[in-house]
Length: 450
Image 1: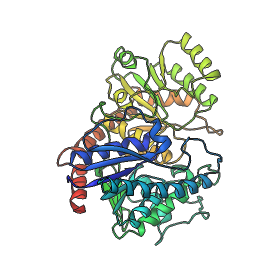
Image 2: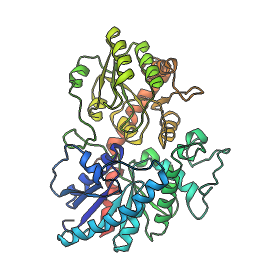
Image 3: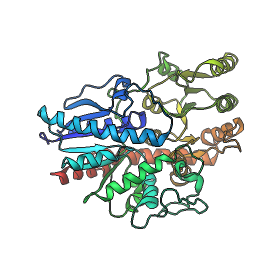
Image 4: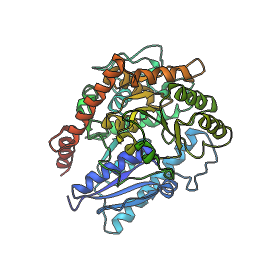
């Protein structure tokens, strides 16, 4: 493997960077050289870039290197990203070659389908790293494959439900939200459709998925004519090598967790992209307080200001039950003995981390694949419950409290969720061990390349 050089391309969001870094670590451990690249603006934001033998960093442009976009039109933004990204990726590949670091394989993440075209033009093999579930990819494939896809962009009828092998019926509110007619993210469908069509043009289409066989075997097998390879969970085995988009909290949250009883704390985080409105924050806050359980809540510094900050601090002054931090090491928190539940937006990275750590969840999905992930958590794996929203799309305090009582209480349903969480934790750990399914899949993937 010493002569092989992988170029890993990732969008600059925590949910994409995390699994990409873990894949880079696997490749360097196998003896390969790896260059991990993200956008110019994204690379500037990344903190504590780990220094690993065989790993270097680079960037390509999305057309907005200062982070400022002159338009909010997603179609125009994506078009510029494609135009400039393709040009700068070509330059990056040529630069690496001129430096004697010829790339031999390109692995690209979501919303970068044009990267495969650039690789093909330069006679390089490539693979798509899917940072969503295999089920989500199977849904997109069912909709957009050119052979028998259900619908094409602009002609999506969600009056029907869809069925995938081994899964319950998926209704409209279980599908990725980009399919909804009023979704502000409908342009994402164009990118996914392009991913599918680009992969179809490859004589040996390869999709590396951050999942493991036992978790999504039926969904993996349901994708025809493509090589879907489960190599996950792509989760750090320790906290020493990671990349953060945000500055860590100066609060000693680990000491605070140490002071709490086992499995008593509600960990609350909605990831790096979801923005909660004031009403939703207030309902979550009151639901947490009324549950009478200690909670650790991640609220980014850009959101924790003004009326929101005043409201939370006023409540916490009267009810000293929670700690607010701007960012933290999620794996450290989920692995801590005192953490008993994860109140989450159901991003795939967060879901896989909850499974690896054996922590049941209360799901409050907002957009993208989060709704599908919440469906899987509640009805397929049985490791949590999906909170019900009101007519305004808000999860009310009574619902927050009900879900927390169900997951963390002593009832039969809660005990079953905790047992299931322990079961999936064991299966996830087994998958990445030597001889496990993901370990074997990854080894075979490398062997097939050369």
